[in-house]
Structures are given as structure tokens and as C-alpha cells.
Image (tube, rainbow, N blue to C red; front, side, top):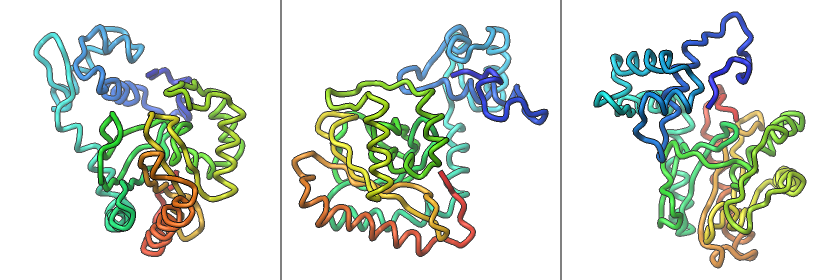
Amino acid sequence: MNPDKSSVIGADSKDYVTSLARGLAVIRCFEKDRCKLSLTEVAKHTNLARATARRFLHTLNALGYVETDGKLFWLSPKVLNLGFSYLSSQPLVELIQPYIREVSDKTCESCSVSVLDLPDIVYIARSLIQQIMSVSLHIGTRLPAISTSMGRVLLAALPDTEIELFFKSLDIKKYTKYTLTGYTSILDEVFLARKQGYSVVNQEFEIGLCSVSVPILNKEGKTLAAINISSQPQKMDKKRLHDELIPNLQAAARKISDVLPAEERLLI
């Protein structure tokens, strides 16, 4: 997490507000594995001076976004308002829930929708049939784009130049013995997803988890999001993928596209 202006697109603009960027960096440095942090730890994770981090923490505390016991700091529930503002302002989020529930009902599998926020995908809707991952997936969960089927579908919609720039700065992590870590092999999968219109990822992010995804398009044919089904590998053989799962996802994606307002612009 680096609030340094040089690392942010558009940060050289005269309209760029460094203090706002740093304040947001302070909020983002709190994660599942570091939900409570000391002043020193916040400064370290944000690359801010202790005095600067202290001012931001106390400002956020005064505004109600951060709580403290005098030694440690943590986010307050008020931070959720920021995420709910996004969800409530996007027609796509409200519209898609019945359609992913329909996919789950027809396939008896969990169905989700995500958007791209490099280097991750972010879950914006979910219909859970059974918990098969060791981590709990919920609205706002972030997973690495390169190692997920929804991520590869969304990456495939980007221009080649953007994909190349992204991959140049990429730090590839190996999650399981099946995780692809070679740039060429991952790029091949992204371009395959573009060609065939779907992506299948088998146990690359977690052992025992397989997923298939297709894009959701707006009325201009541009990718808005990705919709997926996730299950156990033995329940996602090639015949079932092509006879049942992919057709159901494609049908849901078309239905969502059909009901989107013409002005919908939630692009990846």
C-alpha cells in the first residue's frame, strides 16, 4: 500500500489531492489479518511518517471511521457506508440478484458476480448453496484476478496494451500446486477466455475448488462484470460444463444485459 503520488495514475495532475489519497490508504491498510494496528504499524503499511499517520488516524477517529483504545486502531462499522454507497448507486447490483439465484436454483451450485479492480476482482453479488472454500466469500471480497475464472474473463475484455502493462507489474503468487505462475501460460488462458467467451479455473486458487465464468455485457457489448459458478472439481466435468453450467451462466448474463438501463456504465 503506497500512497506515493508517483505510483497512482493521474497523480501528477494539479487536481490531485495527496491528503485524500493518504487518508484512503490508511483505511485500506486494515485487512482481515491486521484488523487492529498500532500507529507504528499503520505508518509502516502506508509508507507514511508516524506524525502524518497519527493525524490521519485521529481525523478518521473524529469522523467516526476509526476506533481506538489509545494504543491500537481499528475500523468502525461506519466504514461500511462507503461500500454501501457504491452498491446503492449501481443499478446492476440490485438487478442481478434474482438471476444469480435462478442459476443456483437450476444448478444447485453457488453463483457470484464480480467486477475488476486491478489486481483483484471484487464480489458484488453472491448466491450461496454450500461453503466449499476455506475463506468466506461475501460482498466486497477481493480475490486475485489472474488466478480466478472471473478475473480472466474480465482481463480478457481489456485492450491488449492494458493487459501487457498489468502483467509487467504483476507479482504472481502460487496458491496451490495447480496455480499457473508463468506469464505466458496465464496470458494464454486470458486470450482463450476472450476467444471462447468463458473461462474455467481448476484448483488454482484453492484445492477442491473449480469455477467457470462468463462475461456480463451492456447493450453496447462492453463487459460490465463476470458471473460464475463454483463447485468441486468432480462436479464440473467437461460434459456438465458444456451441457448445463455454461449455458445457464450465458442465459443469466443475457437476461441481466436485457434488463440493464441504457445508461448503465459500470465498466470494468
